[in-house]
Length: 273
Image 1: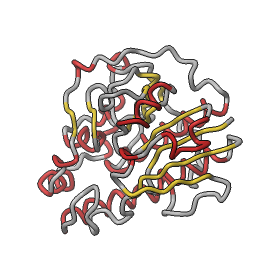
Image 2 (image 1 turned 90 degrees about the horizontal axis):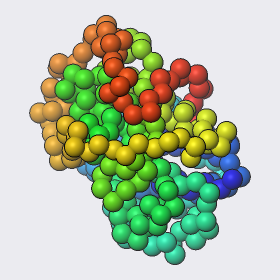
Image 3 (image 1 turned 90 degrees about the vertical axis):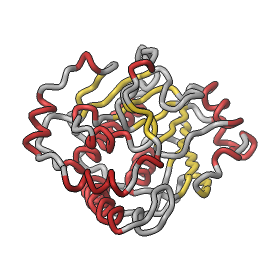
Image 4 (image 1 turned 135 degrees about the vertical axis):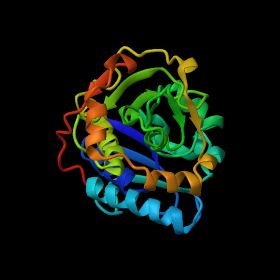
């Protein structure tokens, strides 16, 4: 089995690469790199004292679930890009990576142009950390917490499409009911979603679900990176929910709000790359 993954370079992405490499014959990875010090160095997000404080919490939680930033296995075929390069890539640039059996997208920028059209034709799956169609775009689980709706901090796996996070939904992964610190809930959702992807890739059931056309008219928020300001970050830090509040809301979530939902057992304990 040959897999091509389009992703980024944070610890959660590197851990996923390492796990995928263990269950396939060949793995091709296109990495769109950003800084691993968000808040300190301007990149996808701006830099400020508030952003540093906010991302300190994010990075601590990410390290807890995925370990520190690390190296990917030497067996992986790697193409490293700067953030923003992806839209200029051609299918010719992909070489053997264009002939894979499975195409996955996780955490990189919106893929358009020639490569985007190619991936749509090849039934690529996008791993969107957010509850589509309610929250689409960037940092969706952060916005769900900002809205005090932790029940919508989940992962959505859907077919790649020409519009942001709007393709047919294959399944959605909900973290188990538990007492989470706010930042930990987001990373638990990531871990649960990636664990489910790995399970389905390994048992070759990844394309066997009946997909559901996404009702995009239900979109509550199309999230843009420019909307995540110091004011928003400060509010998130100041008004964070308690683990007890989060658990109570998760215990009362309605499964009919979701599409092909899977409640994760988080049975992949050692996910660190």
